[in-house]
Length: 530
Ligand code: 16G
Ligand code: ZN
Image 1 (cartoon, rainbow, N blue to C red):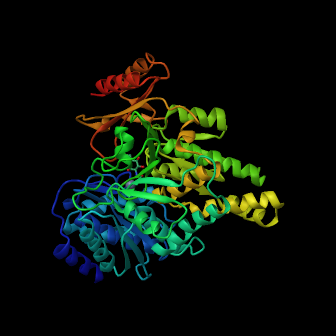
Image 2 (tube, rainbow, N blue to C red):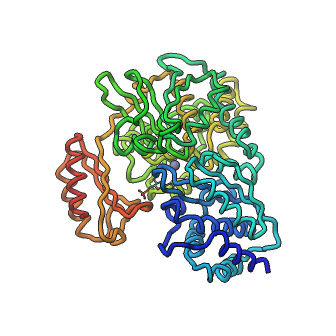
Image 3 (cartoon, rainbow, N blue to C red):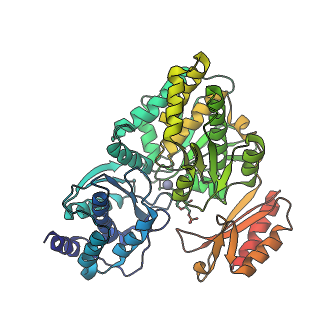
C-alpha cells in the first residue's frame, strides 16, 4: 500500500536519529536544527492529512525559528484561513513527531482513522522558509513528507512567516488577494501607496525611516520593496551580509528584551528606527536622544497608536455600531493599559502569551487590535466591520465617504492572518504621516513604567502554574504570596513569573515607578522563584 511506501521512505531518507522528546509548543516545534529533519518530514505527512480533513484546502508549513539564533530551526503548520494550527492538533503533531520509525506507519493510519481524513481527496501544502542555512534541507524534508502521502507541495523559497500565512489564506479565499509574493506586495504596499496619495507628508512627519533587518528575511524583502517605493526613504541595515549573523545582537527581540539598540547601525538623534525579527513577524521602534538615551516604542505603543487611529476613523465614518477592542498579555506595560482604559476608553482584555490566544480573543470584537509587548500583532476586521465601512464608502455623505475610503485602504494594508512586521511598519508609517507626527510626539502619548525581564533556570519549570492570563501564580501558593509581598513594597509595582513555552526556563517580569525599583523587584522575584 502507499502507506508502506511512506514507512520505507522515512527509514531511508528521514530516519529518527534522536530520542529527545520534542513538543509542538507555542509556535510549533523549535530546537537545534540537526534534531529536526524527521520532525519536519512527519509534519509534511500531517499537513497532507490536515489538508484532506479540511476538504483539500491548502495548509501551510513554515520552516523557521524566528528570533532564535542561527543553530536553531523549527516548523509550524498554518491552517486554511492563514491562522495558526488549531490547538487540538498540537498534541497529534507531538505524538507523530515522537513515535519510532517502526511505529510511524501505524500512527499515521491511526490519525487518518480518528480524524476521518478521506485519503482519496487532493491535498495541497504551501512551504516557506527563513534564511537559515539549515532551512533548505528541512524544506526539502517537508516536501518529501507531502509527496509521500500523495499531496502536492508548493515551495515558495525564502519568505517571511506572515507572507506564507498570507499565501495560504489567499489560496483558500481568493477575495483576500493573490497567493504570490507579487500579490502580497500588490496588496500591502499598494494600499500604502494609495493612503499616501490621500495623505501627503505633513507636520513633523519625516518619511525617512531606518530599519534593523535582524540579518534575516524581513530586511531582505524590504530591500525588494524599496526599489519601487518613493513614499518612504528607507535606510536598511543588518541585511545578513557576509559575517552578519541572524538575530545576533540585533532584531526586535534583542531590542525589546535588552532595551538597547541593535549593533550594525548608527543614526542621528531622534531618527526613527524600526527593528524587525528574524522571520519578519515582529516589529518594535525606537530612537535615541542626544545623550544616546533610548526610547522604545514597543508592541503596546503600536497597539495604542493603531487603536486610537481606528477609533478616529470610526468616528469620521460615523460607524457607531462597530465594536473595537484591544487584546494584551501580562507583559503589556501597565501604563499602556491605563492609557487604553482611562484616555482611549477602549475595552481591553488579557490573554495568555502566544499569538493564537490573542488572535482568537480579537475575533470577538467587530474590530480587534492585538499586540504582544514584543511587537507581534495585527488587527482583525470582522465581515460586519468590512461591510459597514464598504457601504459607507459608497453611500455616505462626502465627508464620511472619504473617511471610509481611507479606512478601506487601512484594512487592505493589514495582514489579518498573523502579526506581520512589514504590514505593521506600513500601518505605523501611514498613521504617523496622517497625524504629522514625529516619533517623539508618538512617545508623548503616555509614559511607560520602567520594566525588567529576567530568565531563571529551575529544576522543573512545570511546578509553576499560572492563572488570570498568567498574571497570578496559582501553584506554588507560597510563591504568589511572596510575589504579592514584594510587589507591595514598590509604588506602581507589578510582577509575575511564568514558565516559558519555548525554552526550559521561568520568565520573570517586573515594572515599577523607577528603573532601579523595577530592576530590584525583578531580581527579588527571581530569587523567590529560584
Ligand atoms: C512564541 C510566540 C510568541 C510568544 C513567545 C513567548 C507565536 C507565533 N509566537 O514565540 O507570540 O511571545 O513564544 O515565548 O505564537 P515564551 O513562552 O518563551 O516566553
Ligand atoms: Zn518571529
